[in-house]
Length: 396
Image 1: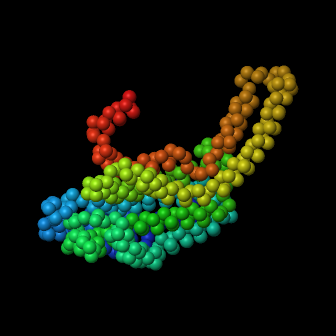
Image 2: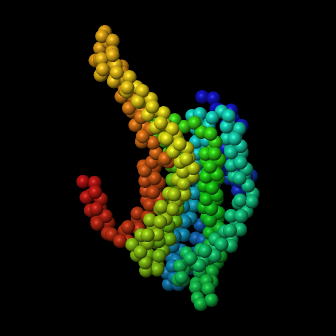
Image 3: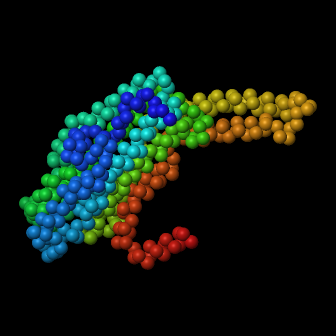
């Protein structure tokens, strides 16, 4: 299939192929033009964030010795952040690039954007690419990280107990050599990678909002029950790795609170529910910009197909019920019956149309992905035998 002309001008459309950091990676041979060399990026960035912490902790005697507080090897939060979440966030760039880029093509290939609005669609792409490549955006992230980000971590997240990275007293926290690297290198690296994903969510929202302002051709009788927009709901699967990484970070934070601050997993049930709901909403809220279109399409479809159904059923009744059918035309095997059934199916598609281009299955899937990293923490509440017993009861 020939690529639509509107997209031939933008073969590089992507939420991730741009920005100062991407250009820096290209010059330093950490990526190619299409996010090649993934393992090299993962190993180097993860190594910069985690390996110095290991070495500095070993040199200061806080690698596994717990006499002076929490040793580095026992810090579940740090390992979850740098050895699980960070590599996944880096690898997610390739996933999002490969799965979101074709979504843009669907608007044209499915003829959802009408021909006269293609120039506006073109400008929406250009605007998104300009914001993606903005230097100001990434510089702002760095400023936020080294001001608000570090303050929030020290005052809201860091444990108020001695550890491999700091010793607290009445005057505040006194970082160890590993702590200085942790505060000023490792955490900012992680926070930058994470916040840059939030920026990309904003870009995606901005692009979809611009598209929703166009004159879209939606088909109310489309069998996907979203007038042909169901591909948007499926596209949210591309963001699953990011939600899994967020869940891993939360699991690490809760593990620290449970093992070293005397908390219980059940103390955080409200926070866990709110956390999962928040990130699921972040992924799906951009798609709701098409709700007005879907509402109009359903209202218009109900009117048009209602009139069509009335006309057809009246003619069907006149022909087969009131005896107007030709004498040589048999009812058995008549195509009129099948046509009536097909019309009923089409009308039911319109009646069952959803007002958002996604379904409960899409939402449940991402909620489950976000929650999966939290499952090991269930072992702090239930024994393995108890969990196995519950699983057997559910399955059998």
